[in-house]
Image 1: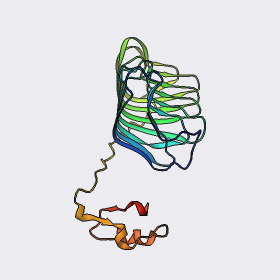
Image 2: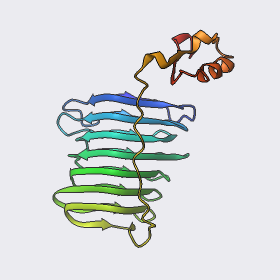
Image 3: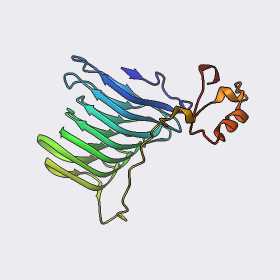
Image 4: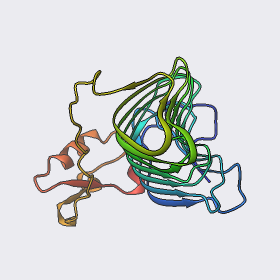
Length: 247
């Protein structure tokens, strides 16, 4: 439904953000993807609901276009065959997930595909899924402080293929025949057990009197770095805004 890139790859997609959005794929769309996202060097997905009307569809969040580098949090994926899929063919692909809920997937909640994909995840909740996390050959993932509930007849909650790597700490699950299958490293034996803390929320400055208009400092693109610095040094300035002519 929403795609950030239509080509095979891109390393100039810096700063791709998707925030504060609900994407619904409707019903009778078995091949649908709610959000296809990528970002090079920095970017993110925050405060997003991805929803299938009848539970069908390929994926809620698909990250299959190199490069994928960013921080994703406060996401809910309801339905689809796969909730979140990171599967890229080449390049540096590292995603970080926090505070994500995946529920009602038909195949797997979170899949980290082949081709050396890397994922760090914390505070994930899986509800009524046949498999919580699947790590394919050549991929690696870290899962911290998460929980899962399985569908009736669910086998293993965490599955890693041969030559795949999954490092797990603080994971609990119910409704599965077993916790792990394949080369999954369970903690605490191999971990320092250093606790992680939440990233502070990014809250915009509510007092508009403390905003500075960069245009007021004589900004003329493209050579406007000096005016940007002048605006940033403004003693009352906590945020900046610019018009469409100074992008």
